[in-house]
Image (tube, rainbow, N blue to C red):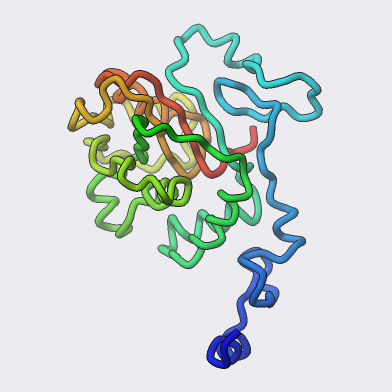
Length: 238
């Protein structure tokens, strides 16, 4: 370590993004206790919605809810962690406080989950914000998270192909029926050739009821996408 770096660590020591406890320079983002508290989602899990099966000895399979659904499944979903501390606070700071400093901690979380394989012909599509909300927030958190997942595949991330064409109310606090009504016909694909006959990885920050990614998947499949896989950083506990 250089004299300059040593002095910086003394004056501005790094701290845990979970509990704010000072960290040695060799430790990234989390103390051991906070990192161990991150609830990574592991197999076995539902091959449809990504729900984790707790205390199950069987392999990955469809959950009861997905089996009972009479609607054709339009996507497969998976998430890195459950939406709880410290992940929930970090995503809130990013999304509502505009705190980009949490990205390094979110990268540690992404790297701690199961790796995701991306083929050369696949495309990554972040869930879009309406232009009004994008201007207000200054960035789309789904785009930033997509870059955390695929830092070496930025050319495959399609930022402007899927668009939100209706300015909708925030989904927070709405029940399932209201969420579906709120987002009906809210998304469209501006360049069908970009997604036609391709497997799409649809990225969002949090999977709650699946309504947002369902509507996005409808638009992508209607534009000719071969398959949609939903990948989120976190998943709300049911």
